[in-house]
Amino acid sequence: MGEQLLDEIVRVLDDGNIIAYGFDGVVTRWSKGCEELYGWRRDEAIGRPLQHLLRPIFPMPLQAVYDEVRDRGIWMGEVTHHHRDGRTIYLASKLISPALPGGGPMTVKSLRSYRFP
Image (tube, rainbow, N blue to C red; front, side, top):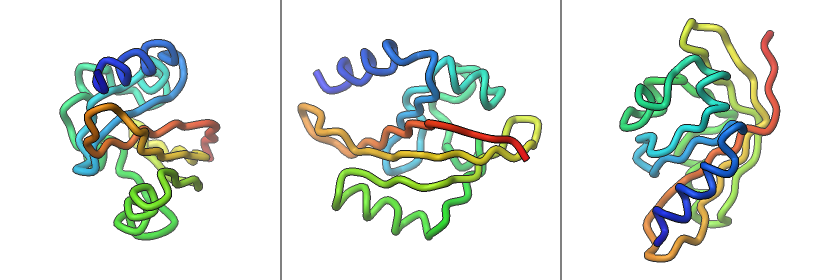
């Protein structure tokens, strides 16, 4: 049930910039909006570590970000990502761990706004 619910959320918000991945960093969902923003097709992104695709830079250690998501269910802040062609992208980002039936750690990254330098 939880995986189907997550599939439906990403499908409905497909034009947005939505990435779903586990705390292991492996991408499980990649929206059409992310294809356009980052230059990676969905089939290229799913199953790969987010670190390899976007080389994210957080304003604090990644483990501290994940701890906050686990403890509070949410983390918000600016994250630096990189486009497939190497361009830097700055994003106002929100990481959440939704309460899905059946449990299991999952982070959904909603990228609300972005800018290129």
